[in-house]
Image 1: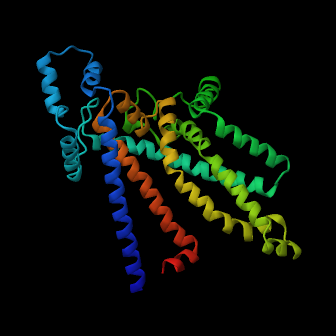
Image 2: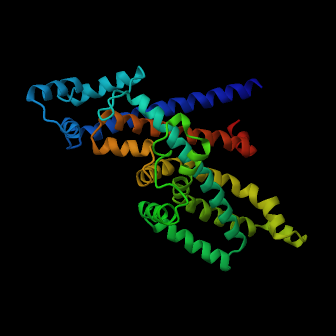
Length: 331
């Protein structure tokens, strides 16, 4: 018992140190890239206001933002505020960045979680179906469909689904996370899910292909193994073999890919949220990039890195739960 507690403590400390070093590197590199941008954030801010300002007012804005300070000093000031939990104030929203991320993350988390579950179910199910019908009609058709979806631009796929299901058939709303003209507290769960289905399904189609094709190949390798041939010789059916021998051997690789797709889902959410006008972190980072809102852009970048790292850490913990051999190696 004591050894297990010490081992878990060692894992958490090691993972925490690696996470802190990674976040520091992401912070410095992101700040350097934003600082090297040729876009003048003050000019973009003034253009968003749509009003002319005097040179004195512009100088006050530059002094308030510290844009005339050396980049190293600005980076150290930003990192010092970051250690105090202060991500700065958004230029376009004129609100603390932490508040904006907190509000938008709730919507993005709901979108990515639904898409993550859909991509896992669709990808794993289609991978098993293709592997069980190798080189037959279902396998050939589904494999070509996977190749087609992987080569189609994501924004084009989202626009097609929007035109067909929202504009043409009118099964789903055109965009947003809730009906227009209704207060947020008056929106029901059913209405939110109705607005969430189409963008979540679009986002899931962007990430299930790798899981499906990888699961197919792993299942084929399992079905060609000696112990499966022995099971066939004993008279076991193909679906019994899949349940007894296949699933436990292909579940872990599928889980690895699924948790590794966190970064892909976050990148895809930027496209999905912009296509469907969904108010999440993806649309916020697009607005921050177009308006040169440096504090908001850096805050979302840092938060997304933390989100992806947390997903990978959860995956590592689940590996030990699902695969006893990995626990023995760790001990």
